[in-house]
Image (cartoon, rainbow, N blue to C red; front, side):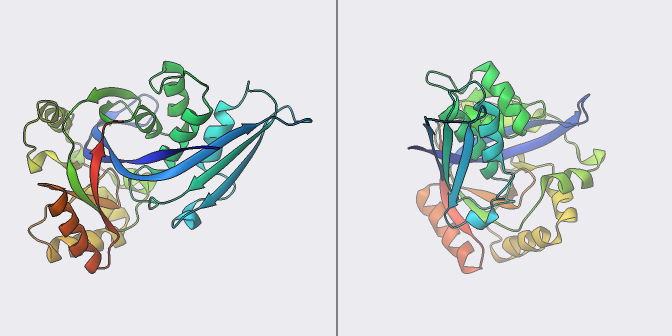
Length: 288
């Protein structure tokens, strides 16, 4: 069985631009990949007698295993989408779940993207147009998780432009749980901020220039806090307890992040945050 990491994604900046013809929100976002990940393994097993459709089995372990639905989850949906046309047999999947759920870190999407890479066939690029279209049918974050690295994202998540920049150190903390659907339902048009902020941020990153704090964060913060009082309370407590730390929501939450001057500062802020009772981790962006 081959295992690969399913890296968390983080929205350094997310702005809502408008509505698309299909009813989804049009977004502009700077997405980075973190060195915090699940592990996904897969193997295709030939059998003597097989059903026309390959049998798919999934074993889940790890500290966040209880958060994964047994019957219908993105890992199984990705496998069912990509295995038609493969030789008859069985697909065995293993998921070691480490990333927290309902945190805006794209754990399920990253797991699905890892399955697409594992089962998509030798020589298939993560940037293959057909594979990216398939990823988009699974969820708006799956294309970015499949492509990897740092990206300027447009549309509903399917338009991707790579950004190359030096690694960033940051602290990531889970302020509370949040649901994407409930957050977007609570969003009002006056909270849309247009595409400029993520586009400026992408330009600064690409030039290796310092990032201004006002460019960071999510247009969805107010809506996420209205829809999820637990998240609102957790974010308020973090900001009150660590006033020198600039916390920003990633996507629809409930994870928040703070940029750091280096690994040591990120570790120190993470330790203070854990002392407050929050799940927190020092992270670095990865380019793969």
